[in-house]
Amino acid sequence: MNNTKTELYTSKIIKAGALIDDTKTLFANWDISQTVKLNFSRLQSQNIFGKATRSRIEDILVVFRQRYLDDPALIDSLLLLMVKPALSQMLDRVLFYFSAKNDRLLYDAVTCFLVSKREQGFEEITPEMMIDWINELIENKQTITAWSEKTILRSAQELLSTLRDFGLLEGVKTKRIAPFYLPVEAFAFIAFYIFQEVASGERLIHHPDWKLFLLSERAVERFLMEAHQLHLLEYHVAGTVTRLTFPAANLEEYARVISQRTY
Image (cartoon, rainbow, N blue to C red; front, side, top):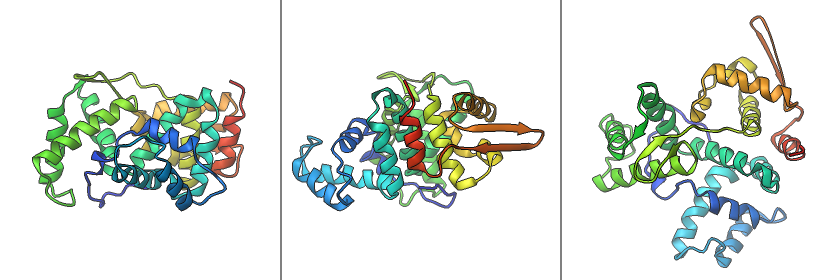
C-alpha cells in the first residue's frame, strides 16, 4: 500500500470512492472463520450491499481487497475497532488513510493538490481546479494512458465527492476546505502503522503520510504529546533524541488496546 514516485496514476477512483457505509456493511457481515474468498462468495450471493448489478458488487469487492484485505492483521484490527460505536469517527479517518494509500491519485489529490491550494489561501475548491490538476498529470505523462474528457471529468467529480465524504471538504455544489477533525485514537493507530515501517520516532514525525490529514510536523508532535497523556503511547524528547514506544507488539494488539479504552 505504499505510494512511489514512479507509480502512474489511474482512474480507478471512478469505481472506488469513499464507500464508507459499504465498508462498514462489509465489516459487520465478515466471518473471521472463513477465508477472504469464501466471505466474498457469500457476500456476493447475498447481495448485502443492495447493488443493482453483480458487476457493481464485484467492483467494490475488488476495492475492499486492495484497501484492507491484503494484510490479515489490518482486517482483524479494523474488525476490533468496528464493534465500538464510540470509535465510528475514528474508523472513518482510518478508512480514509488506507483508501488513499491504495490509490496514488487520491493520495496526491490531498498531499499535493489540496495542501498546495490551502497554502495559497484558497478556501473553495472548484471542479475546474481539479480538472486542471488532472490535465497537468496527463500532460506530464504521469497517467497510464491519455484520458478522455469524460474520464477526466468523472475522476475530478469523484475525487471531490470522496474528499467530502471523508471530511476534508464540505459543501454540496460548492466545495470548501473543511475544518478537519482527527480523533487522537485515529492518529495513534495510524502512527503505530507508520512506526512499524520506519521504526523511528523522528522519521515518523516527518513522514509524508501526515499531509493526508493536513498536519504540519508541529501538529504531529502535539498529537504525540496528547496520545502520550492518554497512555496510548510513550513519547519522550531529549535534545535531538526522540523516543517512541507503543503498548503493543502488533497492529491487532494495538487495535485491542484502543477498543478496550473507556469512552
